[in-house]
Structures are given as structure tokens and as C-alpha cells.
Amino acid sequence: MSLHDRLLDEWGMAVVGGAVTAGERLPEPDMGGDAAPSRTVTREVTRVLESMGLVSVKRKAGATANPIEAWNILDPQVIRWRLRGPHRIAALHELSQLRAAVEPAAARLAATEATPEHWATLTEAAIGMVAHSDHADESEYLEADILFHRTLLEASGNLMFAALGEVIASTLTGRTQHELMPKTADQTALNWHTEVAALIRKGDGAAAEATMRRIVDESDQAISHIAGDR
Picture (cartoon, rainbow, N blue to C red):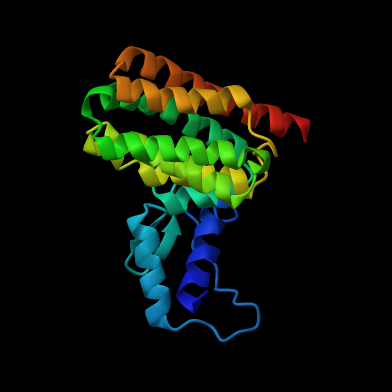
């Protein structure tokens, strides 16, 4: 990581993780014995954090942490930091609630808006998930899972839904990185993914919506189950 990225990660995680609370100033950079970052680097990092809503910059006061209500909570980097923090499970449940509000509606819309290319990609992704289902906690399954959900949102024809692709990708990636995926995928959930792809191609929006809701609900329940087993 560059010095810029290391400092961004240090300060961003400090705010999101709660080490720096609302109203407090950002700490002095800790580069683990390396040379301190220049003013240019600290200024650039502060601007990035300000764009995410994590800090406010005032003349003479410097950069101070904002309360969570001010954060750009859908920024993929903010999501990644939240999933590394102490409230990971709560954040994942919030993201599941967002998915439950969006993805079933996206499946319904996709039944009328999806192109043949979308049909092919959804089917390819579902097949990829099945092919790697014995290693659902590894990268190959994750890639297929992300491809399916990104394509679903794009196939809806709704640009707002499509813009949430990176949010969903960050959510799925966080589950894998933080060991909240089962080693073997749930067979019923796999069947539902294949079914959604087929229902969208068939043009059955109501059934695609209902099945997609089952997928999201199963995912949220699995998070709770795995976290509880720990």
C-alpha cells in the first residue's frame, strides 16, 4: 500500500471503528516506524475522508470526526471499514435489509427489462456458484455470486439499482473475508439462484421477485447462524 492508502486506512478505520469519536481530532499518523507522511499526503487523505462524510474540516480546528449520521454509509470503502469493526454483524443485517428492499424489486423488473446478454450472464453465474459450491467460502464462489447479483441489478433497467452493485459486492466480499460464509453452499439457495435466472428469462416477474426475496432472507439468516455458532 502507498503511504496515502495506509494513512487513509488508518484514519478511516479509526473513525468508523470508534477509536476516534465524534468531535475528536484525527490522531497523529502512525506509520509503524516509517517516515511521517507529508502535508500534501495528509491533506489529500483528509479530503477523501471529508468526501465520505467521516470528518469535517474547519479552519484552525483541523479535521474532526463526524457522527455516523453524517457518513456516506453506502460508500464501498465505508462499508468495508464497518465490516472490519466491532459492529460487523449489525452492519451486515442493515445491508441485508437494504438488499431485501431492492433485489426482489430488481428481479421483478428484470423479467421485462433484461436483455439476452443478461439472461446468459445470470445463468453463467448461477452455474459458477453450483460448480464451486463445495468451497463457498473461497474466491471462485464469491466471484460467481457477485456476478449474479451485479447482473441482476443491471438487468432491472433501473440505474439507481444498478449503482448499488458495488455496495452488494462489498457486502458479499465482507462475508467471505470475515468467515461468515459456510464452507458448503446451501443447496436450496443455489436452486433459487438458478430458478431466478430461469424466471427472468421466462418473464415471470412475480415469481422472480418472490424467489429473490427467499435468497436474501436465507443469506441474512445464515449470517446470524454462523455468527451465533462462533
